[in-house]
Length: 257
View (cartoon, rainbow, N blue to C red):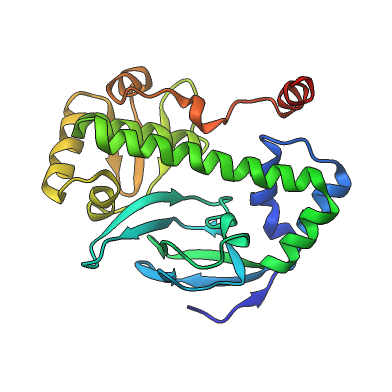
């Protein structure tokens, strides 16, 4: 990993944007997040930057690139259990559980920001609304993980692939009513590790989706040609992503509970 460098607060805006999509934060609270100490590091593709069992004293925020979370069995075989995109705090839970129960790997050349646990604890203690926003962020990650379990365990290969592509489109911000496209620089090996499929099966499944006029892949860009058909093929309901919730409405619901 490259040597860490201190960064300017504006580089934390990806994470702040993610939080304010789902939480109401005052100007003071937002400034406090942007003022967090953070140190940038670039990680080459296919390299772990948090190892299984490693005890860390910081969280890793993805700024550029894509990160995979890997689970591992006793024989060293690994599976991707989560994909983290720019703006995602890949291991916010490590603030309360610093010993890694999974590994984090750069799936493409990736820039991460390392933010000390101590700074996040101080921030959460000072601003309860920020602590709640962190809690909600972890809830979204848990909701995504739950859907991944269903995807691998209860859908066939075509539905798994369609569901993953729909999820990635929304998480990457491709929400136009017409053709949706997004950068997704994963290899077929990565896709197989995420979906529980062999590379041959991944190739065959992508070809079928292309032949059916649902998607095309040009370089590292995915073009979704028929969103409704792809969503049906993947049994996809975006509610679990909590991407379209109005944070003001959420605040009213919580206050009324």
